[in-house]
Length: 114
Length: 112
View 1: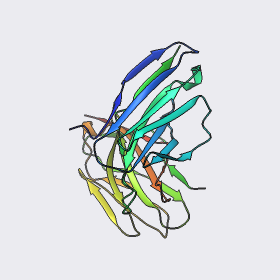
View 2: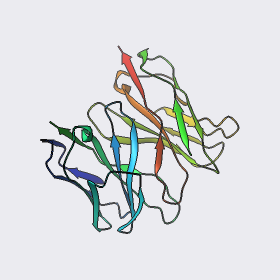
View 3: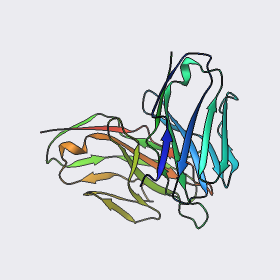
View 4: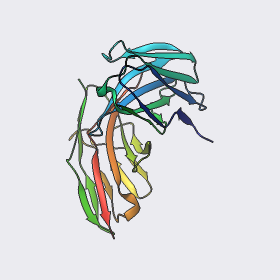
């Protein structure tokens, strides 16, 4: 049973295109996240959603638009892709209500912009 | 703001050697501390955690103790295996919505 899943695992596309990455968690958690891992392996938070509401947006360009149709899903849409968007994107989830802060990560989506 | 500092890698060891990866943090309040591991080509897996001072997290032979007085959470393992080769991330969370602040990661390479 996959706890946090992402699709696709790999995404290769041209500059200027629009693409989406999907994330689903079956842990019943109330909070979901998107992180970006750059080529040097550094991980940084992008967005956080709690019960479908945007809580944190860490100065990410407007070209990135997260959408949470329900508590179990958090998708990431990227418009007008740029070379610098090439990275691995990780989705994660946690149960914040109740004070359990452990985050569980998906397998990642490797985005390559040509 | 919060920050996590890890020792630079790569750390290169022979099988059965003792491992220490240093991690120190700066944070207000009482953060929860984590070690995550990323095997080649894979996602992040939680390795262990500690939520309050003097707690010891342990898993798969790895352990780390939350030291508030030295703001540290060093990762140790008594005898590493080739299969432990991976990138190890120290991280903390210190907010109601628990976003993680990561260190830069330390690559561990274990040779037979």
